[in-house]
Image 1 (tube, rainbow, N blue to C red):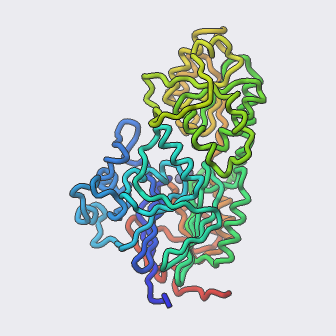
Image 2: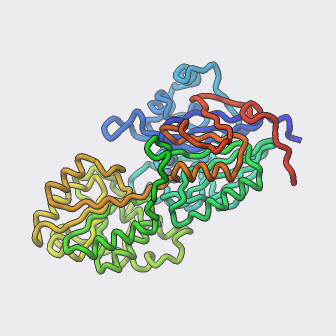
Image 3: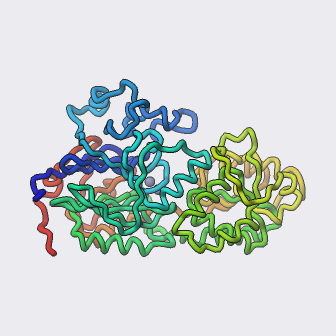
Length: 475
Ligand SMILES: [Zn+2]
Ligand SMILES: [Zn+2]
């Protein structure tokens, strides 16, 4: 019946950047825009605007997709289609009457537009991702959203009228990360979101592949973060996710000094493991207020942490350190009654072998306080596992550690698949076309013979242009 409906994919962002993927699938009068984050490109720590009032800057620099119906009109002001056509160099940009948004997970490159969205815009996300989003807002990391969040469960199929979307959870370093298969009237399009094979839930990728095989996917859109000239021919040996917290414990057991831990707090499953490993090492874990609020608010609501022993242990293990007034880091926005007893810098410094300090990047200067007072200097270790800055060669961090004689232990394991794993997934799904993106070097992708497509920003394709005539669905 719906054979006349035109299916279209329009590509805007994330085509040659890590993150900021913006694609609109449209079918008839309904559009589905994924994801709603931003690549950093024009903004850094100093040149920045608030996520809510900065939408004009984001749109004018093309780091936000030019789909006006997504945004709060109050924030757009007089910015309209004419300006967007000009900055995108287009004569028209596809518009639809019924818009839906999708957020695959709560990393800034996938969710940073949430505060700019118009009230009541339907935005779909996994219920664990939403629990984490609420925690991130409570922790003061992001303003809230006015969009109407609609929750999905792993395996759920939602009917959008002209098409259906089957949501499938994958594995990444953040809870509730979800890809999907769009079942259109004539075509099937799969989106992996960010994914990896070395996480604790890697089996979810096998299921994703299986669902794609059953659906007969025409277009596969996959992330390619790790497609780089230096990783192309040498399959890296990735540290397993579950090993990270073990390495933190080992560091705690091998020194009498303090152990500083820097982990991205949004990796709530890793923080849960860290709490247990800290307990095993006979230490307590000191958290600033924002980190503690994020942990406390997210951990109680995440399906994936149901029954985790950290939910019981955290009252004993976590100690709360008041966030220093000078801190440029986030401060909690809501009054959360935390069940953790407080501690002072003096108490930590006086008994270094009993504590691990969860030290986010903005709080690095606390090292000076802790290392120059209390028990003798030296012996402390800094374990850096995927917290900002996301590099082992950050000059400022290394200078602090060198100055205070703190040993550096880098034990990151990222959230992304190796190039060989992306090739294997693509070969197993065997789509008619693969679009590698969320990558600085998408053209390096070895797709094992599957036809590749590298859209330019603003390219809009009828599905028939992209893949040819539809594959008959065999039931
Ligand atoms: Zn990403
Ligand atoms: Zn991510």
